[in-house]
Length: 518
Image (cartoon, rainbow, N blue to C red; front, top):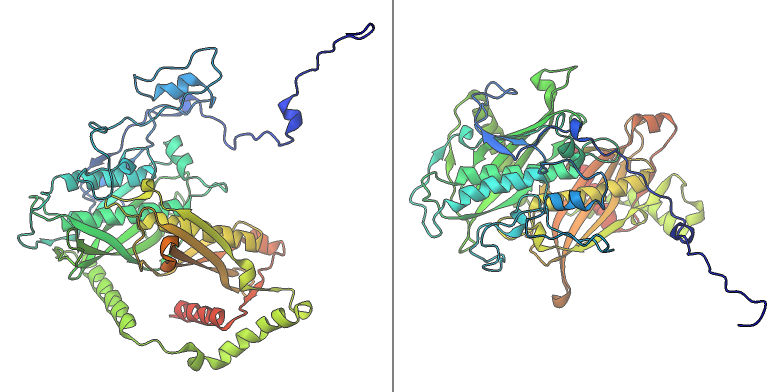
């Protein structure tokens, strides 16, 4: 080194100078231990009557608390908090180490290393059913209760005879203690301080499946194991907004039974201080149809019949029977060619779309083509998303479809939309673990002429794609209806009109418009 030269040590680069991203702050402050009550695991109890319905005594109530028995760590890198829920065999990293140990917060069940678990395994409970793993605490607890019933059944005991059961024997309710359980409340809170509707739809399907399972099982353990799958869901209309800061209850029972199918009605109830009346407490009513299959042969299996007792139970049975007849009539009817039936309407819909295609500079600025509103979401169905039968359960598909539909309406309107209803859903084909599922959404049509409540109708189509076989099949079609907040309407926000560009799109629009008018 020459004279007059000296070695200058360069300062270390500050990572914050390299990356100009803002430092995100948590939306909600970490709770202090004194604000969180002692939490316990979900438990069943049998009250004498329902606080929501005098005619429907609740025979099984499931109280839901969070699966955490301690407050969340104040610092995500606090090793003491991370290791508090780990097993005793886990050893903490050395104090001078820069690595962070990743430990399981779920205790392993006994004999978990004995055999691998797959869909065809004789082990009753796959890893996806362990508490706190991959599903909501409600779904986990419901499947846990269903698994306990399932384990009592003989693996090969045939059904000796069918029983007659009352709706009260399958009636089950779940109670979300949002008002007192901070962790549970945060699990269901969305960014706009409302409830995560997609997660609620997932819980509804899990509860309906548990109720159907209870109805099909005999208490003496002589029932053969059945494969129960969601066949369809009737239209669900949200009657009032659901708050995440008040306790929520879902009550359901089998209301109608056919030869191998059954209908389960669920009521989402949230009383308010302003209107504690039972009629004003119902936020949503859902009707799920389940079908039974023999777990060995896959063919239709007979299920226990139902014997309604009270006047309300008989009325619900009659209403469900009428819905079943309409479904059968709809399947039996030959589809009338829409092009011949509504030629004038097709021409009117396509006229504006052709202007967009042929003369885009002259097209209406308040309109947009359907193809310009589309979004897409593709993923592989993982083993963690399966149900107790080893298939992807319907609630998961409904949640993912809702979340994509919400995002589509959000990107279209420019403001967070309000969910109003989901139309009738048919589960056409089962979805298995490992399937490549592709969800495609679009704004099918809008109703901007309503100045106070403009509607946005979103279509989501689920495709099961098999690249090895060069095939793609439609497994589900979902139709959601949203609106925009009244405040946005007052501020001058307008919903654009959506127009089709092809005959195929125009036919889909007319089909949905006619279905909504029924």
